[in-house]
Image (cartoon, rainbow, N blue to C red; front, side, top):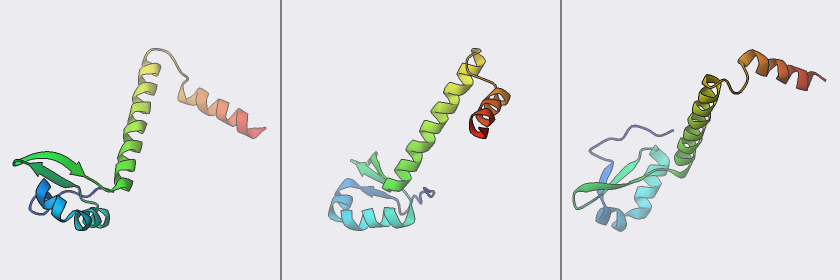
Length: 94
């Protein structure tokens, strides 16, 4: 899981990153802290471990699905929790 950034260690210029890319990539993979890259003194990109990125995408997808489900229930669509579990039991008990 992504760890909290440490401002004194996890912000680097793009030119510094280019010169030391392999070591920064290894560091991000091992400590799971994002690396913020700057250009002309302003933040321009964030480097995170690929597994941490996938976990973020999975969480976003889950939250979107939950939001859609909530909206459908509020609009009278979908099924109640009780109805869902009744259907699930009926399907898997046979």
